[in-house]
Length: 296
Image (cartoon, rainbow, N blue to C red):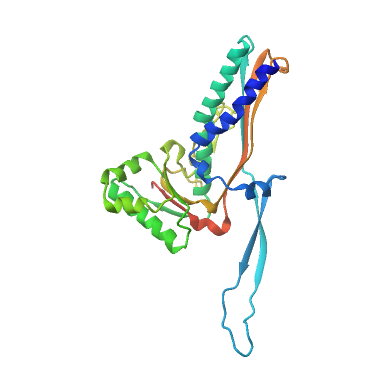
């Protein structure tokens, strides 16, 4: 049995690679400083500073006094999801190992990564203060014009140009590619990277199914449906521009888990679990770094 457990343990770093490859938003993961800030709590405390601008210098009285204000922004982790699968023990040890590898990798590729992306996009799109635009983009020229408006908006807001990422649907990216003009190429050069996002992951709001209630046992997520006045339905996103330093994106805890048939108190079966706990949010003073264009 220890050999089988060791086999499972070897899959864990491979599963991390699967996630990084399949998760389109992993390019926005925050650096280690954010990880350290949230190492011992369910929230992150972010120091903020505000200060007065320059004033006149007087040759007799000297400097004009200014004020500096230090405050803290507290952000709680907002994503905690998991799932447990059971595989009957009648499978032999080698098959169990293969089953785990196949099950886990497919689960991450088809369920975990898409939901993680959808959650992050919806969180960023729904943040108060981010710039939004609506409209139908039917041609490549429409897309280029919308992208030009977006980049100009961020330029005027002095958003860092070196780390802007463009997330766009394959359909719209194809319209731009078909233009193949100098103008279209110049607009696309404004981004550190262009990442195509399937529409199924690209909504302004989603609902996470709990996996156990009636109608939600399949788990996963769906585009949010309006529940009445004042509750707007999720919209299809056309494209989103994200300046990397504007977001707090951190997976605090990702835990693949294996329970052997001997340790399983419920059945003579292997149990394979996966849990993910993390954060996706936008800094209050960097909302200009997010631009969302969605359908009406």
